[in-house]
Image (cartoon, rainbow, N blue to C red; front, top):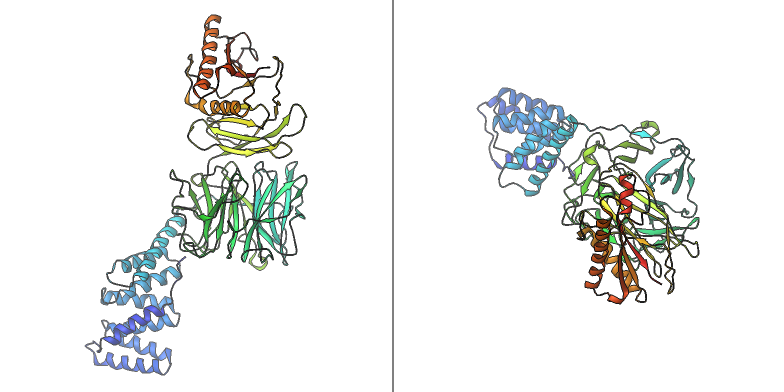
Length: 638
């Protein structure tokens, strides 16, 4: 945010101009007499008498520029802005080109009075003059653009109908920064009770929030806050300041939920934290990208947005400035990354806005940088300081903390929710959750969960991890098709597909999976692996490009288990002639084997077989059932 300079800059420039002229230009001796009396009154510090004589001088001689200028200066200096404005405007009518800074001062005075449509033309006119102070003209251009934005925003308000949370969450103290799990059933927020800040949590039970309780595992005698919660609710990154094991004034820490308790917080270390202020984290849906605000001097303003990525070994990479047009010369703070991974919300006083801090949205571009931020509009943003918002997975339900709806005599921050306008939303996101178990032990397995978007096979997969109990939750942007693979070393993998291309609504999925241990001897009747994402052209044995992800997984599986042999089996529904279906299923199984042979798997480890319509999984009575019967399977041979 540009800080308005004192009007004394204008006054000193204008006074210097006038004094430098060396003469007083007027055709009226009487006006000159009043002018000199006014100057004596100024020296005598008699402002009222000076104003009286300057006014008489310009009444006597309306084109008396010097007297008019001194009158405007004095009125402005005394804070009598309603009188200074017409006095300055008269200077322009006398000589519109003599002193450009008159336009600057008029623009700033109208800006201060929030007369946006009147301020902008003066500021724009000043910015067009040649040879003036570059910083002043840059400031004028910025303020003019801000005036134009505010004028438009006030004339075109966006929908905004905030609803407060119940007394189970809101209290007489301050509630700040609500963050939710993906299912919306758990919230963690910060409460300030007048003494210190602590974490509180609540769960949604029977259609209502339970009374919020302190998060005892993480609260200390110091302040805890500025946090984010992973979508599965099993990881928190938060801010702790003036900590004895900290690296700077405020550092980021992480804690993990494990069997009913939060772990001892761990400093994210020098790769993320600096010797300066590091705070306000947000995590990507898969927990692998961390974005936060930092005041380290290597940035572009006061506070800037930085990011770090979690490496395969669990450590965080060295933090870097978030690329693109998102940074400003001011403070960019309170980032929130929507679960689609492509829509980022934050507050800033360095981008054009309505007030002290506004809320903005920026989107990830094709070159992996962030777009020019877009203001969320009025009345979401006001002349006051808007701090932060978080979003539910549907991309339209926003949560925030504010004191603007409470009595000024008893101001406190409460938690609210509202529906975000359509053009500010991210992509709707759903999630898949469940448990991975071992068939042999009936215990949970810490498996790897991988989703690949089939619409953009070249894109990076979404990779998650089931915990030690086998539980997992993975977020998926709606409107796309996905291949799913779940695997654990020494176990057969699991394949599934999710077609969300026609679904833009929030619709979670529950998927519990049993994995079979790989043994040297296995019976022929063991459960086959249905390769849900081996896809063929209609009526053909030609493998589609979307099959590559799953074919690569089969290849990797065979390389990791060199002692096993497999049979690829083809199956069809009962549409068409049985002999044609048998032929098609055989050719499709052969195509998969050929692909594996071409990629280095020995022929003696591979068999293929086609069964046509003879082994249906379900009745061929609906299109969905017939699709289930059209499949490719992998069987591990004894």
